Image (cartoon, rainbow, N blue to C red; front, side, top):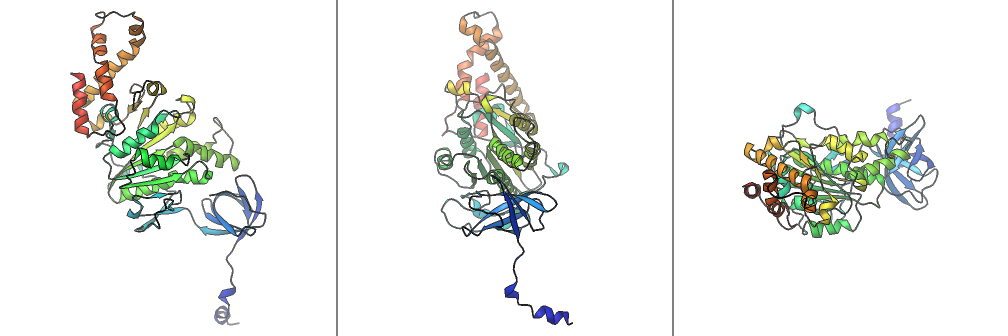
Length: 434
């Protein structure tokens, strides 16, 4: 038989694409069979009944079946509906056309501003972080424009910082202040698991409708767990694109806790055991996979601020505890200061920057130690002073600290519409200690 002639006579119009079939459907996952897939592959699920399709990701594989976690809801799908292999792995198209836009976890526009143009390349959403010896040393200051942070918790380019706060304490307001006041060339904001109304409100109130040099990746609380999980990874991939183009990038993510909750939903639905407050092991391995991708390389930097929603203001919450161990610094917002009308409500005695001594001069660092000592004295003796148990003159150091209390408060309080350059902040900081 002439094989070549046989092949040429095959009618290509009658060829069909390989597909699998749905075998089982649960509340959050779909089990299918009939395709050769790998973990992380993207599949398209086609509903015959509703003539609709949704995308999903292969989460686990057994001998004959594989489990799919869909990117959207699975109502309307039936047993034996078709499953097609869409592509290997998840990627997002990146380029300067993203600036000024609001996109979803797949990089698709959701701001009614039309198609995104000037997209240069596809970047894998899941990738390894930089090898340790390829990372740049953090030795250059990163100014946020917030007085209390730049003076007492100074950040460096490439640093990973956590903002720890309970609900309603003021972390979104602080996020907006940092995005507006920082010196980053490109700003990538990931809003993960937020209420839908908070997205336009954050843009309007916290960013003053100014998205210049800013990309917002939004995955709201009503979206699937997979969209909320990969919204964070998409934001990181976009930030890496701009870093590799030579820019200093600010990555702001709100919040790590809701990202972890999304992975908890996925992990439990695929059979993982809960190990700590219902969180499966994959959550604790996923946090460093995301956070460690920030940092410096020879081309640019990603300075990342991750907000952590502290459950019941408990700093020993497993997500807060794990995040604190990975990050290079933590900013703690307290409800007590918020109730006193103190904004931003940063508890400086409970907060720390692990790179501050590397990015400020010796005088600034010594001034920081002096002011921290003053704040500590005020806090330790606050009750004694209030009840009248302490009389002026008993401790000259405490007298000096109490005399500066109101001046320190005036320095640390900052309106949301105010921003300062670093030199202004340092000058004001030194006047407080005179």
